[in-house]
Picture 1 (cartoon, rainbow, N blue to C red):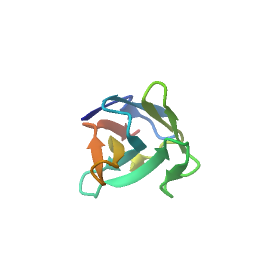
Picture 2 (cartoon, rainbow, N blue to C red):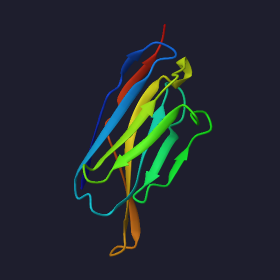
Picture 3 (cartoon, helix red, strand yellow):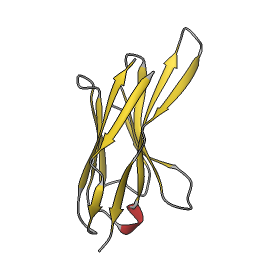
Picture 4 (tube, rainbow, N blue to C red):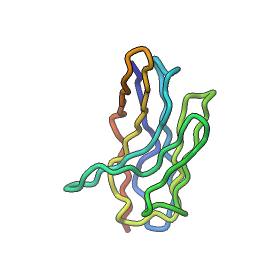
Length: 121
């Protein structure tokens, strides 16, 4: 079992910045990828950014150039630096961890409870 705890959300004005953190604990040794997803009311959950254990990253087109995902493997923590925030970034942001289990031959997804990011004047 993997536990994910997000922090850093809050209310910010357009153009402002926030830094989200996600700390992983439990059985963390098989985590291959960590990422951030978000879900706004009435919309589907979407990938914001992801990072592999080797440091390879992937971003949604809507956040490229504004958001940066990073990972501290020693601290089992993933970060999302969000700059130039827009009202359309308003959503609950969820931390995700993916584990591929060779012994079982399948992967598992773990989710945090989410942290609200509200971008408003």
